[in-house]
Length: 402
Image (cartoon, rainbow, N blue to C red):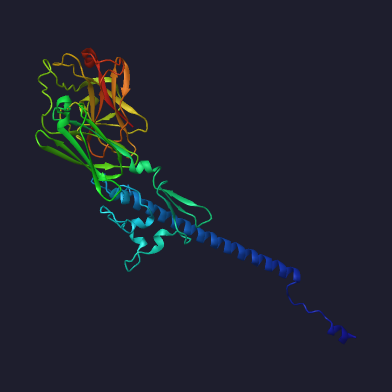
């Protein structure tokens, strides 16, 4: 009896029941699935970042890198800066399409094999799919991932290829050429025309010295101004940036176009400078009074100056000297400001006060070096008729800065 009972005695060994085994298998399966999904997301994220970086490099190779600065001027305008047009395909960035002004390749060394041969990877995204490039929309897109990634080269093609530059020409006495001499001054503006060659546009200024050129691509362009009577020439490098309306006053260092001593009996120009505080002094100054920083006959640039440091418009108004020699009809009043850019988003404009009313000139993004800008009023903006000498004596002038 006792032997039979021993034969069927249950042993107390540990083990898994069927239910326990199923639970463990499910838990392991869930862990594996979560781990694999995590690894997949990590790889996809890496490809996304790689693709975004490549898109940035491609965009910069086309339109340049605005962070590359030398001597206060931008130095890199990419393919457009040399050609004057967007590439027909991304291959134009590494292979000359037959343009004499091409100066590539425009891609960084990341796209080159160790042997120096070009790899095809510059044209494919992180998933191995070719980038989609649209010159008409100024975009490059990657469609290899789960969502499309698009890089805008610029807000529009117009911002890259159709900018405006304008100039006012004056002589040492701040005189424009006038009706008699306007055809003796020739402006020649040279830029790449998109066909692999440099194009030079020539124009004569108005009597007031104004001239403008449109449809100018971004890049470092060249300006020459010829004073034909005396065979004098001025040359300037003009840095044209995206979506810009560049303007500058160009001055010949000679007395050419008016006799400032002949105002009482003929035509000419009288220069009136600030000589007192006007209606408002809001700018920061390093002088005892704001007007004293801007009253010199020859600008001392950073010697004495007024500055603005706000996201909102700040302005000064200064009283000016009374006229002493002028008489007769006043043809125009021109306000000059000499300014430079300290921060990328700064803007300036001229400001005047006449008959208790304030008026401002066009908004300008100044150059990073001191440059003279101006606004011309043919008539008094408050009366819409010719200025009077009484109004000239009472006028207040100044700058607006933000």
